[in-house]
Structures are given as structure tokens and as C-alpha cells.
Length: 192
Ligand code: 5GP
Image (cartoon, rainbow, N blue to C red; front, side):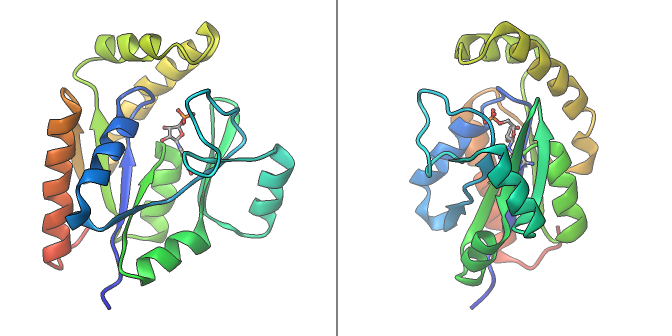
């Protein structure tokens, strides 16, 4: 069986990656499986442990680093986030196209380790619109929002590291464009 693709979806916090990701659930033809990251961040009210993330203590996370359990991991605005290596490999061996929704430092680690990963970056229509979306989410205190916005600007400087840059004016349209990109890579053996 052909090994599944490794798809990296990055973009600043609040750009709508989560919404786009959910739209892929309605596209079974893409054969996508979602990797569930481990994080030390606190669970938001709308999130479910084991579905959105595995929420763990810093001690557990550091232990997982020591045991080489991550394909990549990074620190983002005061918390750790990491992709489980074993799970991703197993899914890809089963032929699933595994989608990682991760920030740029982790994405660059993947690019090093897996040069054939399909690197996609989602940008907002403008920084003003991004600020509006983050403020609307109301899930974080203002100081964290400010840090996330600052981070967004530095992340946007790294779009050149990605093969595809997709603007999220409309999540459905962005998901459709990304679907076309994935389908194209599934069909042919074109490089990263
Ligand atoms: P949030 O706290 O908003 O859920 O996520 C913060 C950032 O961490 C987002 O850009 C998200 O894509 C990223 N992220 C989520 N899981 C991982 C992961 O496993 N590794 C890395 N490097 N980033 C992640």
C-alpha cells in the first residue's frame, strides 16, 4: 500500500485553521486522518481531551520529550505542543494522509525531517481581520491575545518556507483550495 502523505497546515493563531480542518471531515475522498497533539495548555471550554488535544502536565510532556515520542515539538506563547511520532507513522503506513495543524517552529522541524511533507500556510485577508477574529474568540485574556497577535506577525514572515500559501477569506473556499492541492499530490508523485 502507498504510504499516506504528511500534510502540514500552519498559519497564525486565529486564522481559522481549526474551521478549515473541520471541513475536511466532509471530504472522505481525501482520506485524511488528524494527528492529535499533546499540549500543556489549559483546555478551553469548547475542547474535548483526546479529541482536540491530549492535555497533559508539563512533567508528562518533558517525559515524552526524553522518550523521543515526538515527531516535532515546540513552545508557543508559554506552553508546549507536540506531534506524536508513533501515531503519525502508523496512520501513514495504513495509507492515511495525516494532517498536522502546527505552528511554524514545528513545521520547520518537519521540513528538515520529512522533506516530502506537503507544506501549506494559511494567511488572513489582513492583520486587522486577524485581530478581529482573535478578539471575537474571547477564549483568552487580553495579555495572551496581544502575545498571539505579535506571534502572528513573526509567523507571517516565514510563509516563504511553505510550498503553498492560501488566503482564508472564506473557510469553505480555503478548504476547497487545499483539497485540490492535496488531491493533486495524492494522484501524482510530484515532489513536496
Ligand atoms: P492553540 O493554543 O491556539 O490551540 O494552538 C497554538 C498554536 O500551536 C497553533 O498555531 C497550533 O497550530 C499550534 N499547534 C497545535 N498543535 C501543535 C503541535 O503538535 N506542534 C506544534 N509545533 N504546534 C502545534
